[in-house]
Image (cartoon, rainbow, N blue to C red; front, side, top):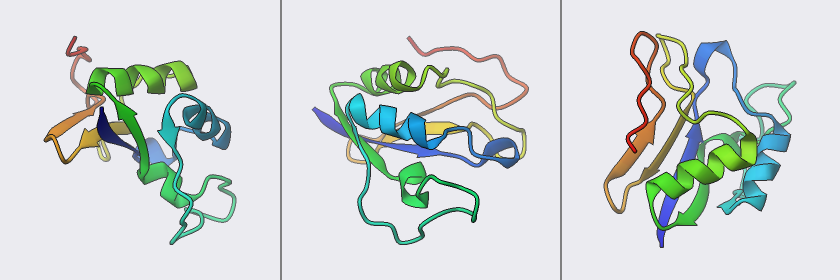
Amino acid sequence: MKTYIFSENHSGGSFWLKRADYEALARHGWTLPTNEDKPFYKADDDVPYNWRHNIEGAFNTIREAVEAFEKATGRDFFEQGCSCRGAPFSINSYEYGEYISGDSVGRTVVRPW
C-alpha cells in the first residue's frame, strides 16, 4: 500500500469540509494528525488547521484514495473551485510522484478513470 496525503484548499473564500467530514474520513482509512502547529484557520473554525492539509491514508492506488474520500464525505472530489485559488481538494503521494485534484473553473471535469 502507498501513503497518500489529502489537502483541502481555501477555494472560493472558504473551506469546503466541516469537522464531521474529517471525522468521517478518519472512519474510512484516513489518519488525522494529532500535532497542531496552528490550531485553527480562524476563530470560528472548529477544524484544526493541520487536518485540512496533512491527513494521510494508506491505499493501493490514488483512485482508491479518491473513492474513500467520496464515500466518507459524500462530496465529488472533482468539484470545481474558484478561478483564483483552484480546486478545493487534492491528494498526492510524493514518494510515488502521484498527484490528483479537481479541475479548475472554466474546464470540463473529466475523471481520469
